[in-house]
Length: 630
Image (cartoon, rainbow, N blue to C red; front, side):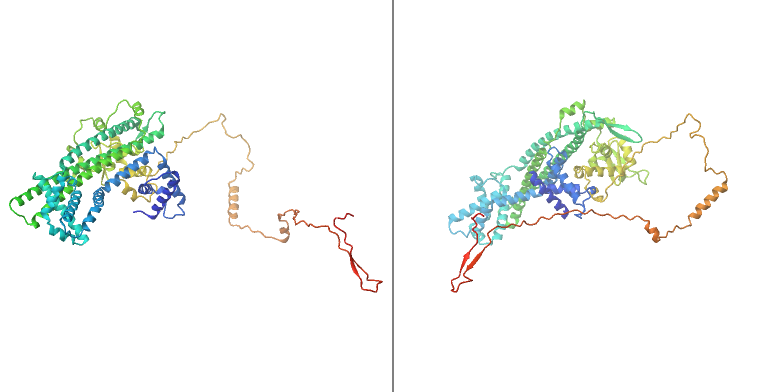
């Protein structure tokens, strides 16, 4: 189930990928986010405010992985997501194929359904031609563009539908016409198939069983070649790690990294991820081969049912001159359905072949340096030879070996005897102890050496030392594997740890860290002098025990006393009080500047105010001119 927080994180990742020219698949990003959020150490909760910084760390961690082209972890997750998505939606392939076929025939079907009852022979022939072309294409029984195939389909149509029935067909509603075409497809297809197996027709109908068997042979050969290449790389990496992780014994057994000093530790970690990648690739190819084997068995069953249906039709037809429609049409329908099931198996085989081809693309970018590994190794071995060396006996089928689980019955019972081949081992049968001790290296377990039964689960170990260590603390090693899967999310679905991690998604620390304390020693030193301190008299030395008792009583009385203080006016004046002041400073303020213009002062004189008897007074302007200098 996708939560709102998961969707928001995915949206933020896609938004940050856009300026980096990254275009990851949204479903794949959601897949990675869900795996990483199984680790509670990211501290991401539904509270956005408190976990915002942690969300950003997660976002940039995923973006950095997507940007890194040589990230083996991300390539492994992409392969894992593609395979899971392809196999889970394998049934959708058939639906998509059927819907695609219907979509391509839409124009012909619409023309047939929209036809009116033909009144002329030419119109009738045209409608019959359309129906035959539609039926032959839909059933996949040849190419109707070939005259022989078309004529055979036309004869089959005329045998079950005359002109009057075709006119009635044209008057049906739209939905009923579509249903009628489906029924005609099955009946006409059944008639043509029966004629083919009776050697009386079947033009253009392929021999699907022979084609399928030949295709299975070719696909298996290609898968075997791919599997040989994968196992070569797996054996090389396993041999390198087995050689340079030496078994040591202290208080307990442990594995020590003894790689040469010139080997980069980061490349060693990358090789661990490459081993996980190729082991996963091997597992996926084997699963596809199992699916193809199941398809082959299903085709054999369909072939038997097809032959039985043909025999039954032959008996019904041969014993009568005419057979009622209600008897023969259902038989033709069953025959056509069986053939359609055979076609579906061919489509699925093609899809599985495509899946294996696409898986190879994820392994082409691996930095697998064969020369470097050959320099580290002188001899190589494989899983089978490794088992022979460990057991020191000839390899015998595991079906002849059984383990006994003790019970109340001393003689044992059939319920306590378990076949090793029937056991579903945890971690796909890889050694749990070495997986933890090496930090993620997948060594195959050897059931002939040891199988540990813990908490209703079986664990295959690869050596007697691994069996002894795991048996002492199985819960610790199981939790260590879960802790390792949190750091390497590609192991979660590969080893089937999703449910276990979901159960402990609220526990941050699954295993207590081991603290190694340094060993301490008690040491003493002796000086040359007899006494460490020079001799002298102690002024406060008291030899009388009563003096010591008297001091003790005084100290005891002091514990019952209370210290008080009184503040007076005079004593208050003795207290120093400090006041922080700030020195004054001058401040200037800039104001507007006054501006003015120096112009002459106006001056007028009125002539004739005194000494004249007439009214001839006039004003004389005495104002100095501006341009006149003084």
